[in-house]
Image (cartoon, rainbow, N blue to C red; front, top):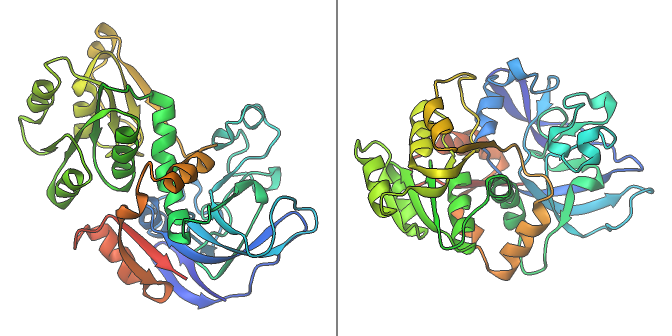
Length: 348
């Protein structure tokens, strides 16, 4: 089969590799669609190696995938050949305290494949390939009125949805979204569907996209009066919920100070720098809450149902399609943010 194989930092090519073996407790999926995630360029460049990712080399990346089941292991129940499925990347060990509580994205054995934890596309092979094997726990049936492209978008939308679960959303209130890449765009659609008014802080083409996607207000992130405009829009109270989807000191500052007293700031993006300064005095005096969010546990089913019902039109995020053979071209476009790119789908 064809697969994108990473052999070192910045060293990856499409190669012919064996089709993975499907064990009795696994499912073999014929991959159809894979969405490029913002973490993929970092991983492929070797930028995640300090975090132990990928788990080993050579490695097949890709985690925002969907496809058709081709083989079902003898011990697997609930799935059959020809089922269309979306996949999620996190598989917890199943027995640590966090997994037992349903927080498998925070598995205490994270990164320890021998202990039962897997993160597809990171610690074990992923879906930039014609075939990938999965444990059934990470598979979700795609409704009949949706496509594998929808399935590939589920991971992104579910990541935004989990952040909203963590921080909340106020129907009739205000939500500020700082950074409107794919996750921020999904956040915008979800917050609107849940009845919140929205303000997006972005720049360039993505600022225009935010307006097209229905933001009540969209202000240039680089405008020195951006915070003042947010306060004016919210009657000088601030937003009930703010989400940092950019992950840099300036975006954190804007999210924190755009938030009303007693409000909540959701931290969604992974910062490039592990440490940054933050206005602790404002957090204490105004009783603002900071909430972290990792991954998308227990969210895929709800997100697929929202897509199926038309509550959100996630397919609008797809700006480009590329075949697997043109992956490098697709990745370059995605990282350059050129040509109005939002979400790029790799067709396999």
